[in-house]
Amino acid sequence: MQDNNKKLDFDSICEQVFKIDENIRSARVINNKGKLIAGGMRQGLRALEDAKKDEMLFMELSLRVRMRHEFDEEFGPVEFSLSHRGKVILMSYPMIENVLFVSTERQVDLNEIPFKILEIIKESSA
Figure (cartoon, rainbow, N blue to C red):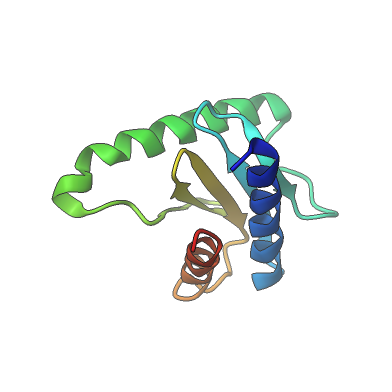
């Protein structure tokens, strides 16, 4: 599969994520070097962090996701990670060498939304 096809797939995944709930603020795909390769903020919303901090956040996220593979044998592979912050909820979903990074408002249903996103990823890679 060529990079252009992958990007189209990732854009589609991000679009599907936005359709799940209006409280989803962003859906972005980050490569293994921490670079944004697809998606973005929901139209009409502004990021809480500036662009320079985005770069740092993405690099840190990419590193953290790679480090979690160290425990795959003991606990099984990570399907997603969730961080409940003071202003937003952040979720990361490993996708081979990339990561789907989703931010939501705090009032989303945590029993439903993360698993709907996981289902989109699984259907896209089938």
